[in-house]
Amino acid sequence: MRISERLNRIPPYLFAEIDRKKAEAIKKGVDVISLGIGDPDLPTPDYIIESLYRGAKNPENHRYPSYEGSLRFREAVAHWYKKRYDVDLDPETEIMALIGSKEGIAHVFFAFVDPGDYTLIPDPAYPVYKTATIFAGGTPVAMPLKAENNFLPDLEGIPQDVVQKAKLMFLNYPNNPTAATADLEFFSRAVEFARKHELIICHDSAYMEITFDGYKAPSLMQVPGGKEVGIEFGSLSKPFNMTGWRIGYAVGSKEIISKLAVIKTNIDSGQFNAIQEAAVTALEGPDSHIHEMNRIYKERRDVAIRHLKELGIQVRPSNATFYIWAPVPEGYTSTEFAATLLEKAGVIVSPGNAYGDEGEGYFRIALTVDKQRITEAFERIKEKVEF
Ligand SMILES: *Cc1c(COP(=O)(O)O)cnc(C)c1O
Image (cartoon, rainbow, N blue to C red):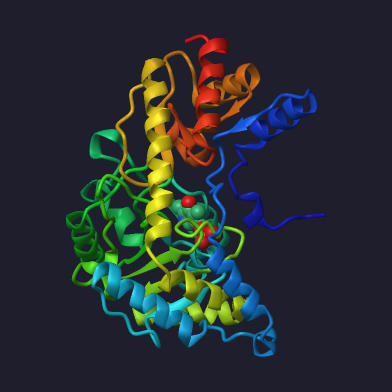
């Protein structure tokens, strides 16, 4: 079997070693605690599930959905943006439903990237931006996210020849994996940069609602011009604990959305209408669920940071996402540290280099287990791992 060149160009899967060790440990009967995966452990709220039941029973929903998403769903997203960010979006042209935001994030590259084109991709980052660039035949160019720049890309530092060949820039704030946030001033600078260099901005806003300490994450759509040069990918996955449901959306420039739509209409046929109806229920539901969920993440964050401090690992507490991005102790690479925690303590964390070269020297903790388990993980680490 000869696989395609594009598949050959995909970088190696850096969790393979961890996966192998995890399977080994479980086989030996170790009670593995995973702080590895960014998948919420809390359940989808009941009223959303009830809505799916109702929708599933309606025969009208059993037929093909519309490609761009139901108007009801797109209107609910428009109301959400109005209510939370005071942004006006036209549900007919500036909003599109996605089968989870990952689907749209992967497909947008096919609409804009040709062989020879560059894309500007944060490093470290969610791996899809890079692999989708490669699938489209383009060349991903890393924008390093460094602690000294608060994990924001240095736009002015991108070489001129790279900028000239770049079609598209991806941003993601609140950020996975660094937990960093960006303010409106940064988005304004990004929009100005995109205008000057005729780039598209794609903003992945998966963690926009996961915030604490009074912080509210801004939207790219709030800055003048954001809606002209960019689109924002949103998701029900993290705010409503709906990762398994596969529903998200793209909002912003109607030109960009319409091009993404051409790709999508040739690949998928939309998301089940009953799931879209449940998503409407989620978006129009009370805020109390999000507040309670964020309270839980904040409590877990504080527990984890306290233990990290006791281990001599200093991190700046972030006021968004359910991740902690921490430097590995001296003498370890990211891979070695993650492997050591798993072997000695049965605790899984993500090695930072799995998110890009700039992630070397870091590890990521996902706060997706309860605080007793987090405490237990750290107690084991303190007892079993030397550093
Ligand atoms: C979880 C996550 C997503 C994907 O969410 P879905 O809507 O479930 O596909 C997108 N981007 C980042 C950075 C994520 O962490």
